[in-house]
Image (cartoon, rainbow, N blue to C red; front, side, top):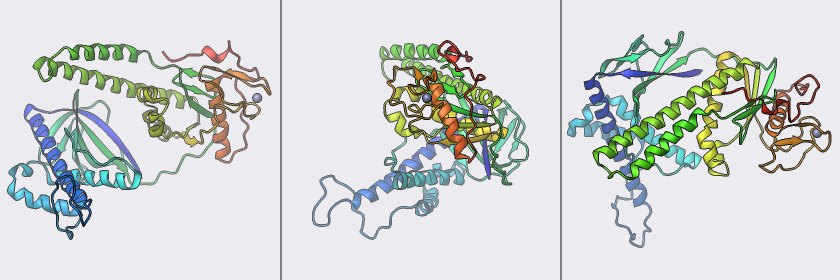
Length: 405
Ligand SMILES: [Zn+2]
């Protein structure tokens, strides 16, 4: 089963905008109320039986069942009779909000995520189940709201079935995310052709096993400078004043622009890499742990997690084999003779093997190790040759090969 998301900017009328805001607000209230109910239940179980709790809390009878998605959906139906506000949004949208809360708890129980928090604002709402014909070129039919116009920035996918609609509120306006599914199973792409290993670097954005180094795009600097300037100006404004709010909005828009630009660049880079290979191997990195450690600021800005997701998607779309391989010791192994060269200091930019004398940029060497691992992982004999026709790429050769603007 294949699921793809298509996103379009909405062109809602003033009244539709108002409706979106109201619905998001009601969703937020429902989410926070349901979370409160669950929290109270958890707290009421904490106090020891033979003593009073130090913090005051609701006393729930011991046989009160734990609030679940189903019990909360039931209370929602009852509450709808009393609070007319709850009758405004589509019932499925509100139920989906409760399902999201359930998912947040499951994530905590199973994957050790933090305790779910109250929401200051809701950014999106979802129709979990929609009719397949709810979308036509240029407009989308949202149940209980009606037809909303949208900007056709790309054509709708063909042969897919519409499953879900999400309306998202961003600094740059309202967007709709259409989730499509393909009913048939698509076979995995087999491994063949020219392989490419990719190593994500520290001073370069990434390096490929063909010896190409891609720099961080420079246009971020200008946007970041603008952001810093606005944030500095914000300090001098009175919190909550109209000029403060106005500036806050401008800052949100710059953030949005940085995100959009980065994503666009990721897509272009992914396509460019796919132009050059029939198989792509990357390191298998736990980005969550990574972002907490040494590379904190660095990775957050580069958004490698997002880039890898986009890359795997583009590979799938273009029929290119994609695999993540074990990342350990990639930077300490010589791709030419496979000896461990020992840990390199972060300042050492060049891989120079003491055993065989192979010399290249350290990130290129790491990406060459990655491609070799990938090839052996798919059960092929490693026939990988260091590129550039037998001539070892030296310090003055491929090392300054920055092809990206
Ligand atoms: Zn060597």
